[in-house]
Image (cartoon, rainbow, N blue to C red; front, side):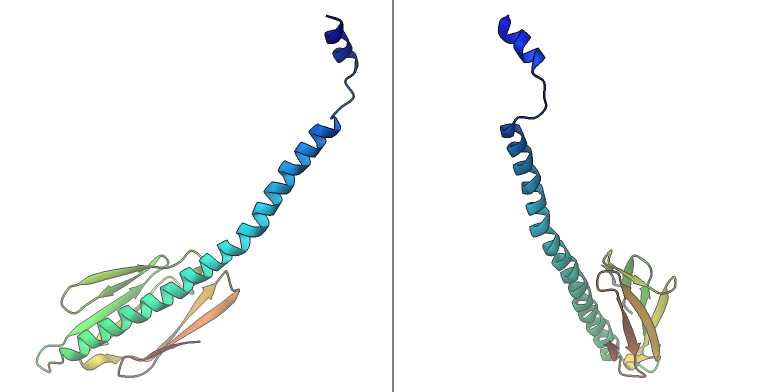
Length: 152
């Protein structure tokens, strides 16, 4: 009983041990944050690189498929539709493949459509993409004919 009365009287705040425990927990959280945050940016950068690699693969596939099926009697056309969230590759034979745009990237404007005509002809065009992660723009240029494009 006497101990309880003494404990009630001596309420001055944290003891040194309690303060050390609080500082250790706080420094642990700060340390984890400092080591994890750069890795998160690397993962996001990798997402953008994976997107461009996948876009290139799908682009080459759809252009080659359309070129191979060159037929003057039938007008074969493949289409690529780019909107805010994803890119749709619609092949001439009805095959439809989609590619999600990473959250760190966006296109200028609402959407755009690229038509690939028989023989691989693509109308010249330039589209801009913005990377929130790298704080810069990608300029995607499609050249006249042969289905060639560049990223700057």
